[in-house]
View 1 (spheres, one colour):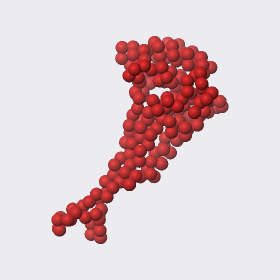
View 2 (cartoon, one colour):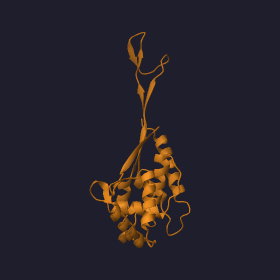
View 3 (cartoon, one colour):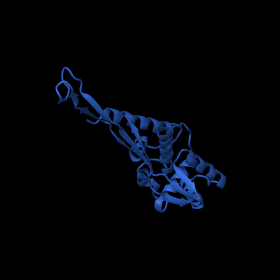
View 4 (cartoon, helix red, strand yellow):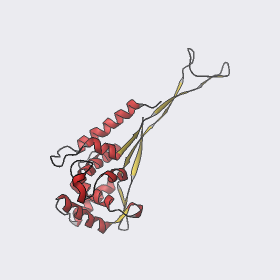
Length: 205
């Protein structure tokens, strides 16, 4: 039997993290945090089942009763945070006005980064439009294998930021943002090529 109560509790935890990540945002940058959670996270409920017990006195398999306690087997639930899934519903800069997520697209990425950091890494860290716009641009312009050259990432980030009405990043600011994304395990960097981590799976009970 699926534990829908545990599932709802996990979804509420995600929504609290999303609301915390969106604190301080003002119109027109507000975002529908429930939409971010729905786009970014997939929550599968834990399952419990009765497990037959052996009545050693009689050599019988039983399913509970007045003299024997029914065994309970619990399969943990799974939470998947998926950047590809989020990216699919966040529009490109050119069609941002038709966003499925209200507010500029980078705002949804900022909230998702906060969820990722808190739920996956158990860390609290205030993130900004800098990391969010970098993550947005890397995912929107990734190539095969979810990879993109480091220098191309900077150019695509600044093109996106121009579309958002944000100031361009210097190379130093871009490198600091990449360092943050590396630290929170969203990306890998090998030989000047950024590899994006698509998802993580987290068990819960």
